[in-house]
Image 1 (tube, rainbow, N blue to C red):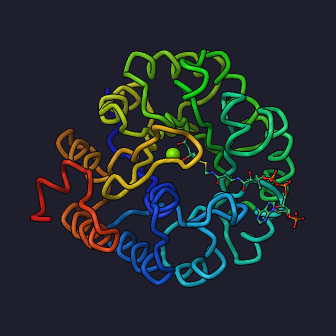
Image 2: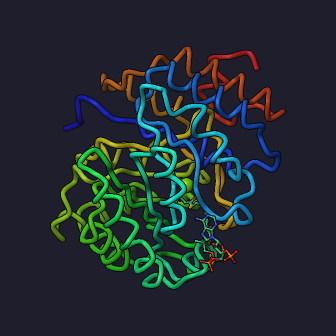
Length: 300
Ligand code: HMG
Ligand code: MG
């Protein structure tokens, strides 16, 4: 069966904008997030407290976060290390995310660490974040869960091992990333089955699909059929990753909402307002949204 309700974890302002060639002015980012909050989305990933030289597009995190922190939505931020956590906590963030890799090549490219060195870097971040209080929640991203641009297909046990490590260190939720969009539904089902068999509760799992090969919606449906109820998506299909070639945009939030609405699954999102927000953002970026649903429902 399918779930009655899905929580969308909106990543456009972070995963989307981190990959734009143009640096979007802070005021435009803040307005984008305000408009997203006005669509009924409840979890809007805002920015990353990473090294500004690694991701210049998000170097304004200190300026952006206070402009939006009063919004009545959850505003997760990425923190790779204790330095990032300190920066996020200083601004009052209560939702943070670490980001691991299932493969050595991407751990090196994205974090300048081996897989295990990166896990060792996250451990004090998670421990210290959780010690801030019961209202703090930590997400653990896991990239390259299906395929890697340097290493090819990624074996399921490799992914299970890092998932277990992230949960054991105290992450409340995991997000399974198909960073380069190569997954297909059978692979998704196999990974989710293996994780369940390894004792990982499906309620702790979210899915994060990039739409490079046009498989993101099919993969999402496979995950819903396995009981997943948290789905990452990016308004207008913004996105990618500067450290992995051939990572294009994430699953577009509009495409996701269209499918879920048709299936009778509640998201609380006003699709018309969301499309209008993505059209507005596309105008700022100077190019049309790649989302099929945005194109179908607008005259951009
Ligand atoms: P490093 O060069 O190894 O850093 O980078 P280091 O620990 O050696 O420190 C070097 C200097 O950076 C030091 O300064 C630190 O203070 C400073 P110095 O003493 O030389 O003056 N520094 C920082 N400054 C500000 N904020 C910080 C910070 N940390 C260190 N947080 C590091 C290691 C992790 C910092 C770097 O690799 C990095 O920032 N990586 C971020 C990469 C990134 O953001 N990638 C995109 C997000 S992941 C993604 O998109 C995938 C996802 O969507 C899921 C999917 O699709 O798969 C989540
Ligand atoms: Mg991503």
